[in-house]
Image: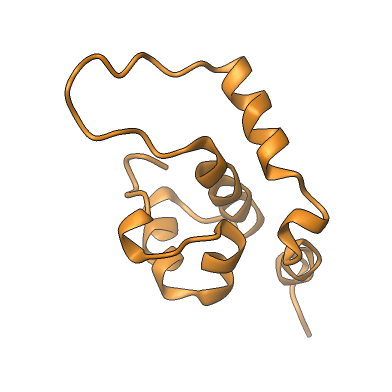
Length: 95
C-alpha cells in the first residue's frame, strides 16, 4: 500500500502538466527579490530549480540535509526538479 506522500508524488510527477513552476517561480521572485550579485561569490541557484525542491521536501517531510542526500540519490526527484547533472544540486544550506 502506498503512502499519501507517494500518491501525491505520482500525481505531481507530470511536473509541468499540473504545476506551472515557471509561473510560481516568477511569483516568488516578485514577492521575495534576491539581493544584487555585485559582491563576489557563487551565483544563486535559479528559483525555477528551488521551487520544485521545496515542494518535494514538503511532500516527503524531509529536512534540508535529507533533501541534499535524497536529491542525487532518487531519479524521480531529479526528474521533477529537471536536473541535468549532479553539479546543479543545491546543498542543504541553500535549501
